[in-house]
Length: 68
Image 1 (cartoon, rainbow, N blue to C red):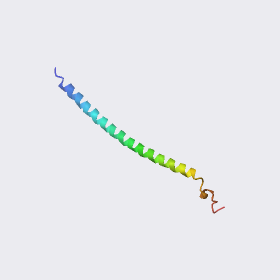
Image 2: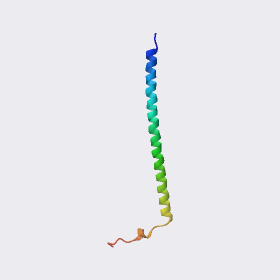
Image 3: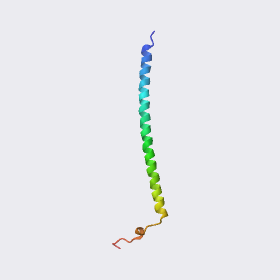
Image 4: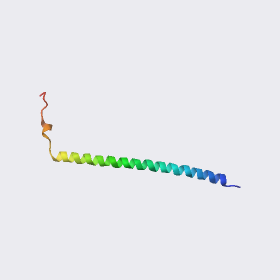
């Protein structure tokens, strides 16, 4: 009784699984890079908001529109 066809089938399945795992790993890596970029942007925006709040309201916020 030869086990070669069964072994060959298992080898093919393992090769497909390895390729799928690598593709998923690549996608996960790219997603993490995007998350890191978005987190950095978010932190910069928070810093800008905090610095704007700390400086107090600007005079332009209290200007009366010309139609009044």
